[in-house]
Image 1 (cartoon, each protein chain N blue to C red):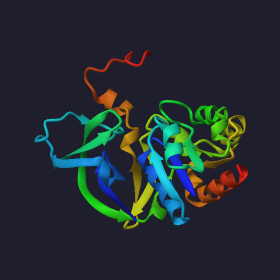
Image 2: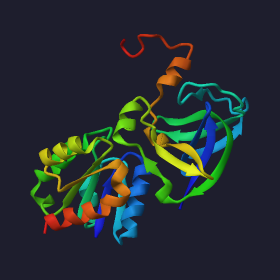
Image 3: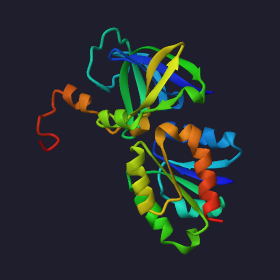
Length: 122
Length: 131
């Protein structure tokens, strides 16, 4: 599976990439959403993992923008954040993300959330 | 495994991705203003560490800088409660352990200046942030 990670934190990108690599996924990571649509098409991305607290645009807002585009229908979305689960779950629902994972749990839960997001779009 | 640079800054053991460090030189030779990541005693900090940050290269005073290899499983991100408590220091992203010593984990790509640095700046005024 091809997964795109958008997170401004280098440490978070490395942790998430490592976790997904271990589960056999190919990972592309970006520090900002600039050029994201082109990257999704060029790299044939199946699932996008978005940090909620991006400096340029809120991740949940970005997820909403994705969902408004028909050509992104088959791309799964996972929101990650240092927020508590309840708040993050609400943001995920509002933005039509397929799964949410809190930052302290990314190492264990992100691979399963990515799989869930992928299946939800098939 | 990943490589981190570990050092002490203002009395706290600290680690950051090794790739964010540019150089370490004896203090006074770098010619750079030093930023303070959090309040505390400078103590025995004889090195100036030049690092890449969100606002460009910045220098941090430190002691005992050295490289170490850490398993990814030993890099822990902050819980929501700690994240909230440390909200004015978004560059503190977690914690790790090297030789059983706990260290704060920094990500200088999230450093946009610090409250401590502004306090330390003699030119800073109380209303600099609009207060």
